[in-house]
Amino acid sequence: MNRILLSTAAGVALLASPVLAYETKTFPLPNQTYIHDVAPAPGGQVYWTAQSDGLLGILDAKTGANKFVKLGEGSAPHGIITGKDGKAWIADGGQNAIVSYDPKTTQVKVYPLPEDSGYTNLNTPTEDNEGNIWFTGQNGIHGKLDIKTSKVSVWKSPKGRGSYGITTTPDGEVWFVSLANSYLGHIDRKTGNVTVHEPPVPNTGVRRVWSDSKGDLWMSEWNTGFIARYSPANKKWDRWGIPGVERAALYAVYVDSKDVVWVSNWRDNKVYSFDPKSLKFTAVPASKNGSQIRQIHGVGDTVLLPESGNAAIMTVNSAS
Image 1 (tube, helix red, strand yellow):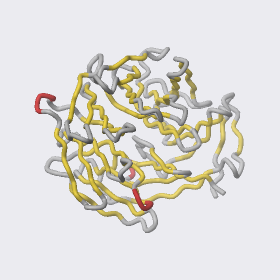
Image 2 (cartoon, rainbow, N blue to C red):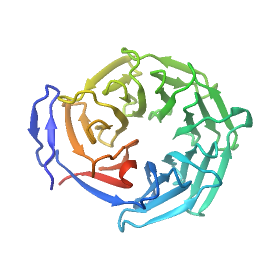
Image 3 (spheres, rainbow, N blue to C red):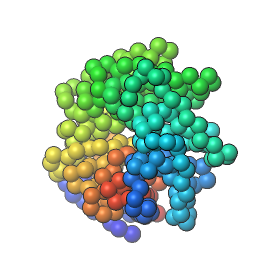
């Protein structure tokens, strides 16, 4: 078991206790593929997007074997989630469409955006409590796929370009962040209108967002290297920097089943877990240098890290 350094909010480095230590495992992927995002799939498998090849990858975490599904002509899949029905839902920038894969039938279905949407540079999807798929496009749009009618609707996001990470809270509300314009947006699911919530510090470059079990929104700040939290219940913002880490560039954020927050820092090639109760950070090095972890997901006690730069998926588990 690797012993991993633990840092407190005061910046004091401590050796992690066995309870707080983590064990890691790495699954190499075909070198020619360019993994972007991952999502836990049915049966202990992992969905992942092979962006440069237009493929959906499916990793068997028990054997390390992968199989691939062609998504369509010109496909360049970016973000991916697993719906409540077990289907993979993909934001496909190459096809300018939302794409689904049904593991029961192996059917791939493409839902093109309206023709007048133009190229949107699709980014990330999320599923609301009714099974509808909401998504962002970096060219400044957010949209919805109505699961009952298959209708795709697209709206222009406030302030133009930059719509990036998106998440659904436990009560079904949908929120997204704008990387280019540094705001948190709350989507009215009936109208598509957006209420903008400005962070207390300008130009933070909020890149990804994830809801915890209470409905608080956690964000990774690319420009400043801070973790941000916004609580809709009391309209309060909080921010934390990683102790002892200067000029961090936080790309991905994820909140696990215990409400521990995970972020990836491109500056030092590590991911950090942050416990909001104790305010302690734990550093977990990537499998190799140049990992370029653009997204984080997980299931149960397992955290999934897609290493774009290393053509690998690294898993992190709490050590027993």
